[in-house]
Image 1 (cartoon, rainbow, N blue to C red):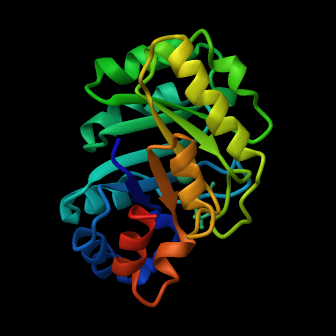
Image 2 (image 1 turned 30 degrees about the vertical axis):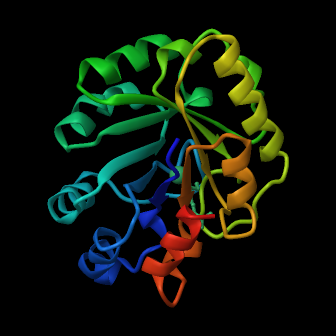
Image 3 (image 1 turned 180 degrees about the vertical axis):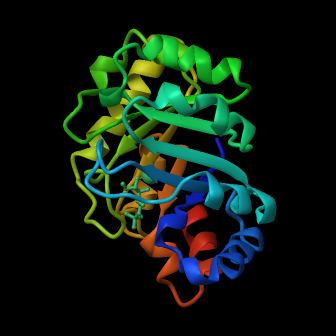
Length: 216
Ligand code: DX5
Ligand code: ZN
C-alpha cells in the first residue's frame, strides 16, 4: 500500500496559513490533517468551521479531520458540508460508536476511529469491519510537538493482525511525534498513513521533509 502523509496544520503558522497550505499543495502529501479540539475531551482548544472553510478553499489535498471533542454526533453533518473526506472520532468519546460511524458514512464521508495510548486495540474487534480508518494515537492527544510513545509499535502490529483476522481493510493511521526515525518502522509494521505536525512545519524545508517521510 502507498505511504500516505497527512501534515497536521495545528503546527503551522496560522498568521501565514495560506502560504503554509501552498507548501502542502506543492508537496507529495496526499492529505491535510485537521485537529479539532474542544477543551473538554482534551485540555486544549484548536480551531473550528471558519478556519476549516478557508483550508478547504485553498487546499488541493484530501481533508482528514481528527475530532478530539465530546458529542461529535452534533457536528457530523456540518463536517460533511465543510468538505471533510475522512472524519475520525475518538473511541473514548462515543457511547454509541456504531451509530456515530453510520451517521458519518450517511453524510458522505469515510469513517475513522481513534484510540488513545491507553486504549487496547482489542476493543475495536466488534467495530473494525465498519470503519474506513483506525487512528492510533502515539501521544496523548491535545498538543503538537510531544514525544512518540514506543508502545505504539505493538499496537500497529495488533491492529494489522485484527484486520487480517476479521478480513477487514481499514487504513491504519498513526498520529503524534512522528519523525524520520520512527516513520520507517511504522510503515514496515503496517501503518498506511502517518500524521506529522512539528516534523513538517518546523522543518526548514517542509516539502523535502514530506518527501523524506513518504519515502522512508
Ligand atoms: C495531537 C494531535 C496530533 C498532533 C501531531 O493531539 O492529534 O495530530 O497535532 O503533531 P506532532 O506531529 O507535532 O506530534
Ligand atoms: Zn491528530
